[in-house]
Length: 513
Image (cartoon, rainbow, N blue to C red; front, side, top):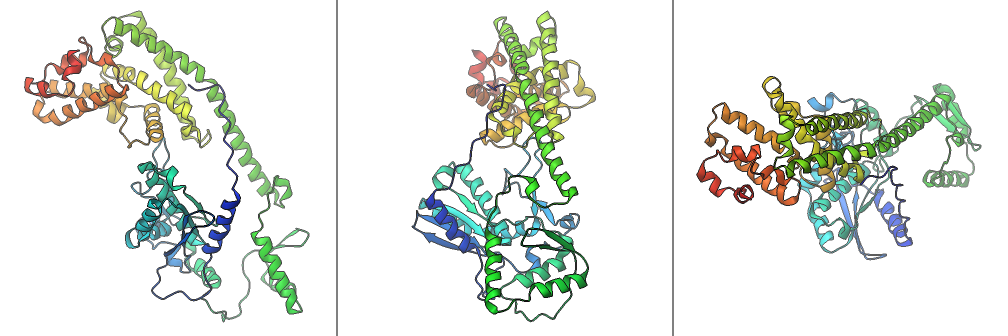
């Protein structure tokens, strides 16, 4: 059950000496060779490097691309509407890349997504990865520049497949990727191509002289930042800065530059970085916003006891109804006793508490990891299974289906949709597979359609599916036994079905208990 305070985050495990050796090896693999690439080589290509030291591993190194076409996707109808050239990820390929509650798919660079899809469909990537897994090797994905983005997508794809097959621990996957944004500006295709041409090791250094343009940032040896936009001043400063003699000074400067480029310095405080006041204010605002989200989470955690107490009261109400031989759904729908009224009060209290949580999530006022906190997922599942049947009973008691439509299509609140998706995400279950709390909504709709004159033959498939689902939910403990009580409105309706169907039904024994 949830505690009053969230559990402290787990510390990341430090790299072992063997891991550090592997990282150094894979980083070296990620950089492209200066030798010309074969003309037939695809932009999104990869190489597999097998190693036995420090332990068996297979490193998949993805080559960078020096063509803007592989960075910014062609101007298709969808991509043209996106200023960053991004597109939704394929839910079938990356089912976990989505918001848990709302289900909105993530977005990434359209060209990189297309390049990775091309690798899966037109290269031996899948077979090579499968072979490495079968040989119980550690899997490493690495890449330089745009290859780093492809390596990121490959790592996510691999983890998705391992998760489905339950072999994630056996494969020991991790990836080493020099960071590169997944969404470069699509409107800067020409500018991007110019930069890629300059960086490409295959491009000869015979371009004509040009003038600097844009904003230049110079960092002095004392770490003082100088910003220039005047092209003449930039040209003069570059000229005098590059007056190095003899040649050894140039080599020393290059070595120092590369050393500074690769060295990772841990900046503990914003004050140690020379930033403008505007930048410091933006960073401070972001930090304060995250602190506020943590405070909001603490406030929500404090409401956990209220939720648990209300759920205990409703669970006692359910047991009382069962002792009287009545399902708590039917008792609540009739509203004839005082305890039915009290149960409605608890239902409304819980609805208010959970609606507040869901709205805070929609406004991004809670930490990103809130929906994955196991204690809240389990509490949300208990809430959904116990309280949603009461919401359904209230919905059909007031005949809202006649004006608004069916509960499942028009009336289901977000508090149940979100908590259902949390549960499915935690259990790695298919989306929409945990509808046990909506059992009574399906029953109500089938009853209404038969009252309106629909023939059983027209509804047979839906009835059979309901029976099959109910049988599975009952056996797993997610559907209460009160559903099959002799006085249950579901049992009364089921007994009106054709005898031939009932005799072959998978729930015939449950109904007769």
